[in-house]
Image 1: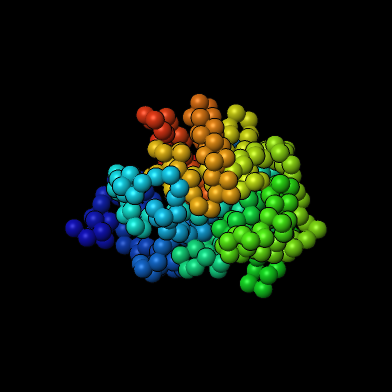
Image 2: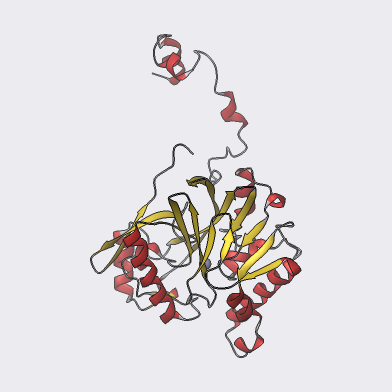
Length: 326
Ligand SMILES: [Zn+2]
C-alpha cells in the first residue's frame, strides 16, 4: 500500500488523528528544504544539554588517518582493530568536530575547524553553524583547545581576518608562547613551520582580543580549562559544569577511536611530545572512567560525545545516545 493510500484510508480517530496528519495533504515542507540533494549529507549539528548549558556539536568534516600517521603499533594490529570496528584500515575517516556553547548570555565556540586549509572533506563548520541558527557575529568567545590548523584555521576568513568578528580568542598562554617562539621551529620539519605560521596568523587576526589563560583557569559561565599537555604544550580540555551535570571537552586526547581506546599507548605523528601525550591520555581515560564523566572529542565520530569504560588492558568507547528533549 502506498503512503497516500494508507493516510486516506486510516480511520480519522486512529493513527492519522493521533499524529495530526490530515488525509490528502502532501508533505510540502519536505520539498522546500534547502538540503534536498541525495548525493550530499544533510547538516551535521546535534544538541546536548549539560544542566543549564546548551552544547551544539558542529561538524567540520573528516580526514583520513592511516597506520603511517601513528606511532607504536604494528600494521597487523592496526588493521585488525580497524576490521573489528567495521572500518576500512586504508580509509578511516577521523571526525573534526567543533562545539558551540550557549551559557547565560554568551555564545562560546570551542575550536573553529579548518576552513579551506585542509581540503574539501573539511571546512563545513560555517555552513553547519548557520544550520544551527548561530550567527558568527553573535559569538562572544572562541576558546581554542590548541593552535593546530584543524582547530583554528576556521577562525580566519578567506582574506585572513577574524571569522568571529566580535569574539575574544581564549587560548592557553603556554600554547601561545610555544607557537610564537621562533626558536622552537628553527630547523623543524616544513609541516611544523606551516603549523606555526597559521597559529601566528590566527593570533594576529584577533590582535588585542587574544585572552591567554594559565593552567586550570576559570573561564566563567561554568567553563574551566584543564591542561592536557603532550599533543601540544598548551593543549587544554574544557570542563563544563552546571548543577550536578558535567562534560569534559577533551579535544585531541584520541584521534583514531578504533585504535587508541583499546591501545592508549599509541601516539600520533602530530604529537609535539608523544610520550607526554600517552601519559596524559592514560591519566584522563582513568579519570573519566572512574567518574563516569561524559566526554566530547574533537576527533570522536560525530557528534563526538561518549562515555568510556575499562575493557581488558585498555578502554572502550560508548557513544552517547540522541538527546530527545532538551
Ligand atoms: Zn586535532
